[in-house]
Length: 235
Image (cartoon, rainbow, N blue to C red; front, side, top):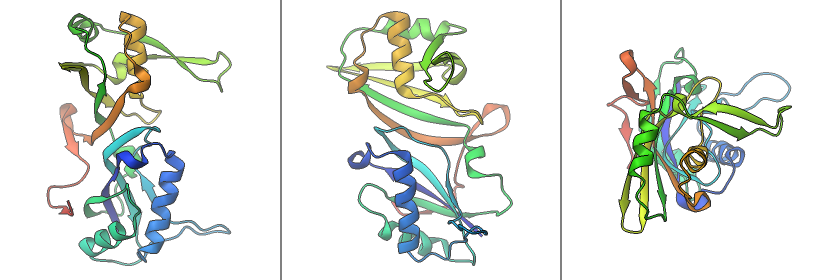
């Protein structure tokens, strides 16, 4: 039996690393005394995984953890036990049982929806329209481990369209970003690419980045929820 739970990474822990986030969840699974399965071998570890890595500084209301159990357990009981065992900053929002033979959780995440808020009050309508009309936008992303020191990516492959609304002294960007088996794109890289291409002067270091939704890919590109409608809701 596998449990899939929707969890959060709230603002108060936005600056912890992905590795520490994973370790925190693992410790909570043990504290909750869930009958989690362990791998075999000399160094057995808990069988659980997350859908997609989240960058440092990014808030999320839509992370997903999948836990393999050694024996069946009531979904709501398990979800409440884990929620109680998690520290401040991580909450369980919903949970459901999934087929043990389903594809790995990470391979099912096809994209994510983001909201990015910046202290910026200039009109960027022309830049947004130009971006949406462009067929390609190449951006050199720093990649210290490569020989060249950078990797060139096509922003439009990952983020086909953006929307932006100015609310007084703030500008709010909304967009969907593709997740592939070989990687995805960070919101800060989009902002840097917009600055580079359109000379906007966006204060990237002050961006408030929120991941609002993770989704699977259905037929004809339809976005499907990571949990079925019948999932147990805790919040």
